[in-house]
Amino acid sequence: MRTSIQLCKFMGIPVRLHFTFLFIFFAIIFSFANMPQTETRIPLGLGGLELSPVMRYSLSTIAAVLFFFTLLLHEMAHSLVAMRFGTKIHSITLFFFGGLAMMEDIPRSPDKEWRIAIAGPLMSLALGVLFLFVYMGLKALEPAYRPVAILVLTIGLFNGALAVFNLLPAFPMDGGRILRALLAKRMSFLKATKRAALIGKLFAFALVIMGFSRDPFTFILTGEWRLNLWLPLLAIFLFMAATEEERATDTFATLEGIKVRDVMRTERATVPEDITLAELVNAMLADKITEYAVVDAVGDIKGFVTLDAVKKIPNEQRYFLHVSDVMIPYDGPRDALLSDAPASEALKRMLSGKKSILAVIEEAGGSLIGIITKKDLSIYIEMLRGGAVQ
Ligand SMILES: [Zn+2]
Image 1 (cartoon, helix red, strand yellow):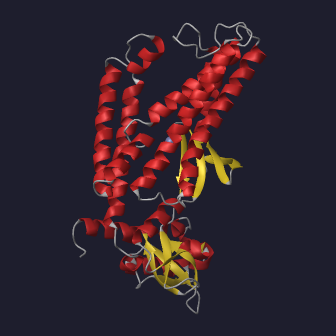
Image 2: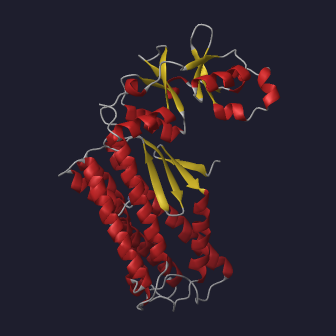
């Protein structure tokens, strides 16, 4: 299911909106239009002001659009620094929790990583300061500009909060990455990730305690100590992110030094395109294998076929449909890996392209020498972890 749509391109980078972003967008419009002035110490909405509904909702829509742009600028800051280090940016996606810049290959160099990570919060901080200056200018012109001043103040405070929040030393926040990069200067990347994840988890634990007793965040806003059950929810999110980061880093560290050649399968790797699906199922049963590359009469690769594709075909049709009818066509270089490429490259390609099988070739444009599947790769990783492969 496609959960996001491309909105525009910004400096050549596709900007995508995840459907969950719409909720936050309308939530901002509604809460900014109606948030009562007395609720918080600092005015954060137009509630209680004498305004026509058109004016009220126009200003609130502008607030939501400005919110969107400042979030985008935060992600652009990460992306621009990463691009300067030669990293390709696939896209920027904005969703419920904020933004995410999808980078091709985040540099494993601590000096680059912390610079990429800190660029976003610095941008948010700069925007926050800029909006606060504009607010002070507008405040001098009161009371005619009061609604606009409140709008500018709200966006400024939002950006300040975004900067502070993102500097928290926990994954997946930028602060978690900065912390890991600083630690990685003194230890291995894997060890630094584990250390940073542990600090993130301790931090999550502190949030749970704060949420159930006294929440400093509501205190800053309202001047009152209250319970805040959002904090334990946030803590669960941080805890999961830390665990996921550790697991992913561990997997990539395990694959270090391993080549595609070491993991590829050369036997029982292909089936001819003209056999029936019934024959294919027999081959799968005999080989105990669920994925093959599909080849033509001269052995050139034509596509891939998996058990999942066959499952969709009713039993009686499997006698006259052929492998070529259900295969996923071969997509050239995007579906192929060089045999001496790192095995981690195969994993990355499978994760980002949602592929379960890739072709292995000896040189660019060369013929098929084997296949690499997600299943084989995960079994191999298990064996590496168990110390079975030397
Ligand atoms: Zn960020």
